[in-house]
Image (cartoon, rainbow, N blue to C red; front, side, top):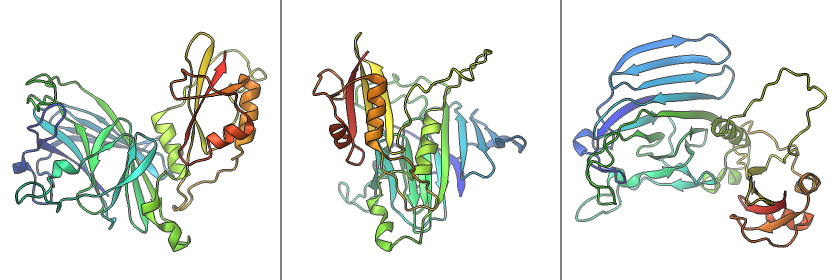
Length: 347
C-alpha cells in the first residue's frame, strides 16, 4: 500500500469543490505533490514512531504502529496554502472497484464511481461529483483483503480507480464565492489543524460459504474494527489518585453486551436523564473478527433498572415520556440491526 499527498488547485468556495483540471490527469489523478524536506525514523518503545515527514508547505505527517497489531495511525498537522485542496491518495493492490462509506457513523453504504455517466452536453460526470461524505470511515475490499480508514474528523472521499482511496485533508484560504451563502473571501482564513487517521488491515474469511461472503450485503464493521473505531474516536479517560482505593472501586455502569452501545447518558432537566442505546451488527466475513461472549439484552435491562430505577420509553430528544419499559419492550426496542432506543430515567 502506498500513501501520498497531492495539492489540487481549487476554484471553489466554502461549500463547492471545483478543481482545476490542468492539475488532474485523465484518470482523475492529481499531479502536484508537496515536497518532502525532512524525514526522521524512530523504532523504539512499545508504540513505535515509524516515520515523521515535514513538507515544504509546513505540513507534518507522523506514522505510529504498535508491533503485532493489524493497524497503524497517521497524524497530520496541516501547513499553509492558498486556493488548494490537499488530498491523501491511498493506492493498494486490491482489485475491486467498489468502496463503502459510513452514514453518520451508524452503518456503511456501498458507493460507485460513475465517471462514465452522461453529464450535460457530451460530458461525463466529473471527478468532484463522485465524492461522498466520510463521517468516520471508508473502506475498500476484494475477495481476499479489506482495508479500512477510520477518520478522526468528518471529511469527503472517493475511489476513482480499483483499490484506491482519495480523502480530502484540508482546503485552506478558499477565496472564491461559490454561490452557497458565503461571499468572496469569507472562507479565506487559514488555521493549523491537527488531523488523525487509523488504517486497519483484515483478511476475508474464505472458509465461509460463498453466499455469506457477499460484500454488497455488508453494513457494519467487524467486531475487532468496531473496537478500534471506538478507542480511536473516544479515547478512555484515566483518573488517578494517591489514596489506596483497592477495595472501594465499584462499576459506574453494568457490563454491556458487545452488540449494545451506550450512545449517551445526559440530563434533560433537573429531574430526568436521557439514556440512548444502539444495536450494533458486526460483519463476520473477516478472519479473527472477534467473538461476542455476552449478548443477553434482558440481563442488561435488569442491571440498568437496578442501577437507575424505572426506564421510560421516549424519543431521541427525550421531551415526551412514554410507558415504563419492561424486559420485553426493552429487548424489542433493540432487536433490529442498527436500531436506536431512547429511555428516560429519574434522577
